[in-house]
Amino acid sequence: MEKKLAVGAIVATVAMWASSFVVIRAFAEELSPGPLGLLRLLAGVITLSVMLLWLRRGRARLPGRRGLLLGAAFGVVWFAVYTLAFNWAGHFLDAGTIAMLVNLAPLMIALGGGFFFGEGFPRQLFAGMAVSLLGIGLITFAGTTGRLSLAGLLIALAAAVLYAVGMLIQKLTLRHTDPLTATWIACAAGVVALLPFIPQTIAEVGDASAGSIVGAVYMGIGPTALAFMFWGYAMMQFPAGRVAASTLSVPAIVVVMAWIFLAEVPPALAIIGGVICLVGVAIVQWRTPRRRGRGSHAEPTPDRAPAPA
Image (cartoon, rainbow, N blue to C red; front, top):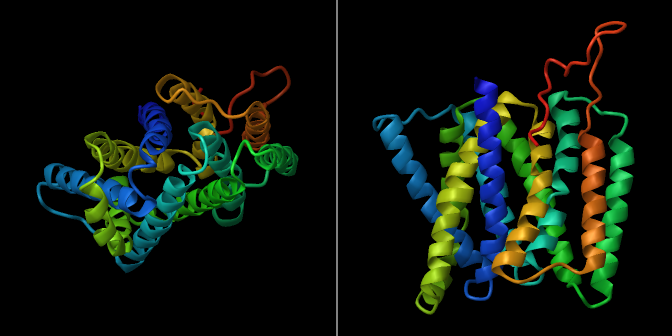
């Protein structure tokens, strides 16, 4: 039952994260990266605080010092710095291209999972890396043609690195506390890290449209508070690399959403490069089922759950 709930949590998270790419792109011109990130995290921490008060009846169960430090580091890296890079990329690139580049993170997470969590180094790891690098090369070449911004490509790649580091720190944090508490600590730390943007936020909110404010609040409630809590639950059930593999579906969802709501599609060469990148990530994440004996049916390895479709 827990595994089924974890798969459902992953599906809901992937859908909410995909929508965030479109929201960022839609309102990137109205709110700067800092104010947008601060509004998002404020909405997230308020939502998480209400959930903690309701579910825990006002009794917070904070982890020890190590858990608090890890949770704060997770929040600063992923909720604050990653959010800034993610928002900034929306000023230069279309939603689909950002999604394809950010979703190189599962490959990086697979490496980190092998180094730090003993999740192993599959033989296809380096083959997948080579394929993904070819994809990055095509996307970069699309940037040199003037169809994409090279600055935007570098910012999106930096966001992918921050994504991977943040998820690995989250995995460590979850050894000391539950997903809801870990997400609340991280979100609060992210808000503190973005407090220097308060004056700019006050200035920009006065001129921003209602849609941009609603979009920022939605990103705080959905893609931040709920999605990260769901993601943390899934991380407790499956290995980090396998959970990260589920984000392979995000770029495709984003491209469809961006086409419907924003009428934008990445350049053809960038789409080809993005598909190649995702093939490389898929190669890394592929697991060959073990067989118990001759003529037996293939079964998944006991400590690895198949990634959701």
